[in-house]
Structure formats: structure tokens, C-alpha cells
Image (cartoon, rainbow, N blue to C red; front, top):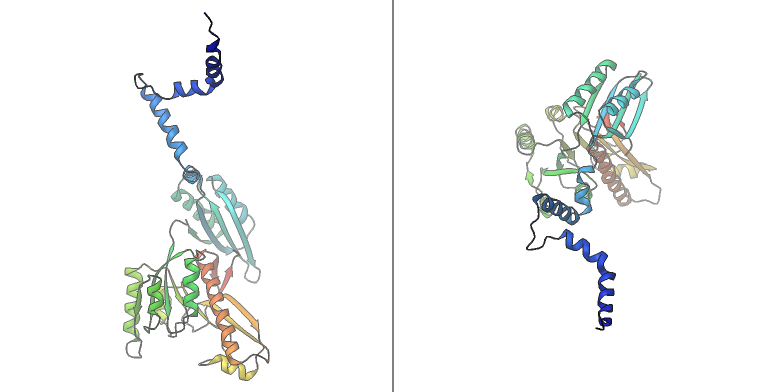
Length: 346
């Protein structure tokens, strides 16, 4: 019998055998019993293969915390904290330190990854406290798992408000914008366009204390506010307000103070022929406009600049300086002491 007609078929099977055999033995046949273990392995492989690379890497993503310490300068401080974090299985991502030689004070900010921590938060916090007690230092530890809640206070000027809202929408300010408070209703449409609650508290000489009490209650009990931003809020807050939010109220104003106090500072600066204008962002304290300075910026002015040029350049400085100061606070890059600030780099 001539079987030469089978040669092409046999050659085809042999050629494709390496691809067919694994499929036969890996996929359950409808009439073949498969053990639960085999099914589990197959299902796990299918799930793993269907997962995105981002999902598979979730467990490997870093978890960053920020530690700020300050106190008397002494040898061994940097080594002590480095060894402590290493011993707990944490990795230092970034660290910066500074020394005030006049007061013999040491400052350090450590940004570290605790995703592979060998102990727990309570144990590490206890270890940090022990090191700080040994060196007579104070510390602040932020685990980075909760965004700060922010309230913006405004009046009628909108340039700082717009800048904060737009920068936040672009992801440059890592916080929750919970509330906008004003003593005028003018800027409510802006808040509405960003879906942020807008509350008006009209301030007069007779109602100031009562209205401020309502503002504080709203911030603390309803919105759990961590930071207040005075984005050209043209009212003076009380000493009690400053105490409740100590070093958590950021104000912005032109840098002419105390040279040109009062209204129309840019007009008066133009009359004097100033050659520099600037903006200052600082923490609000009981001493009006005398709080610890966080950020400042300047720009040059010439005889060619009119009053409107000074106002335009000044507002640009104000909104950028304010955003920079707010960002520094949100990222825990500030240590306040002796009515001034150490601001670590970003």
C-alpha cells in the first residue's frame, strides 16, 4: 500500500508538536479530572497575567514619612537617627540639616521610606522619642498617610485665590481644599467653579468677635482644618485665632512694611521712586505682620514703571510667594524657632 500521501500530514504534526503538547497538558479536558491544586495554580497564573503592572507593584510602592527635629547641637545626632531608622528597616530617601551657631541649635529634616519597616509605628515613634530625650531635642513626625485640610480666607482681591486653586488642581499643592471663607460675597463664583464651600462672615467692629468665633467653630468642628491661608484677607485676626492655629496661619503682603503702612502702598512707593518691590509670606501671630517669615521675593523697578506696573508686578510676586510658602508648609519643610523659620529645600 502506498502511504506517501501521509507524509505531509505527519510532517505538519511533528512541526507543531512543541506548541500543541503544552496546551494539551495545561488546559483541562472536559472529560478529564483535574485536581483542585492544578486548578488553583492555573487560576493564580491567569489572575497574575491579567493584572496590570501597577497593580503588581502596589505592595512594593514606597511609603514616605517626614521627621523634623531640633534642639541643642551635639556630636552624634545625625548618626543616631540614621542608625535608628536603619535598625527599624527604614530607608532614608532625603535628609538635610542646618546649624544656628549663634544659638548653638541643630535642625534636621529626614524624609524616609517605611514600606519595609521591621517593627511598627508605635515602636519607631518610641525609639525617636528616646533619641530626642537623650539629645534634649523636640521632634515632629508625619507618617504621610493623611493630607492636610486647608481653609482659604479672602476678601475681594482674587489673584492669590486663583493661583492657589489652579496650582492645587494641577497637583502642585498636596492637600484637601475644604473651605473658603470671606467677609464679602464677591468671589463666591470662583469657589463654585471649583466645587469648594464658600462661607461669608461679614465683619464689623461690633460683630468681629462673634463672627470669628463662628469661623473657628466651622473650621475646627466641621472641616477639621489644619492650615489657614490668608490670601489677601483684608481683616485682622485676633490673638485667640493665632493661638488656636499657632504657626498654622500663613499671611501674604507686600514687602514695603513698615515703610508704607496703610492703603495704596504701591502708589506711595511710586511717589518715592522705589527701585525694588517685593512680597512676604509669614506665619500670622499676635504681633501684626511680625510673624516668622517663610518666603520672600523681589523684582526691580525703574523710572519707566507706572503705578499700574508696580501693582501688576506686585501681585505676581504675592501669588507666587504665597504658593511657595504654602507648599513648604504642606511638605513639612519648616521648623519655627525664635520667631523665624528654617525652610529646608524641596
